Length: 321
Image: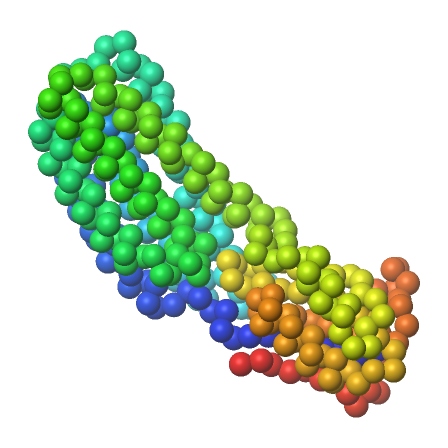
């Protein structure tokens, strides 16, 4: 029985580049937040205050994402053998929960205003919203590439995206109010912003919870992965297949392969090639067996693997760079 482990150092996605992008976006967002809050109260616009609330969560999300990067880079220790990488997911979860709270508050405030819409200064409302949209677009451009790699940055990016949509809504609302005098349009825009944000927030929340529950990442087709392993030369069956993620792009796998009378080094290389390049697995542990272990013996045999590996010249620990 051979036990092989491999991992890819390229999964370190919390880079200094991401930190610099987040810092720049945070400075832009925080500066405009102060302006928008003051303008929201001066113009009496709920849509503008709604946008300011989202801008506040933007700033908080960016700050949390920065902290997650700093903490995630801390080295592993005897207590946390995976290090602190998963703090990224906790940050994404917190951001999603903040967005839910803000959206619900705006919907409640809109309900209160429907019966008594206040007088709104539409011109000031429009000017502030245009400036906010420009800042959001700049931040989105900065964060977009990193949002494809990190769930943490994706959470911050979604915050900024939702606020950009909010700014567009405020501009439309201000234009309608300016030409028609329909003050209730401001409240309608605020409600639409809330409903637009909620489903996207739910997606982020679901992804974060799935990782925390050690679920199979959404991008992994577990049936195809299983069939690809079974198709490898010499593999008769597989069991104890487990796939989970530590962070967005750090996917782990363990599996037992029943493959008697096979070149184990070659089988390991073939399996690693398929798992890493076709399925995006960054770290894997393959246990190759001559005969299928009884379920109650798995833990015992795993403990004994270190001793058994010395008896098999083809037991390899290989690192993929």
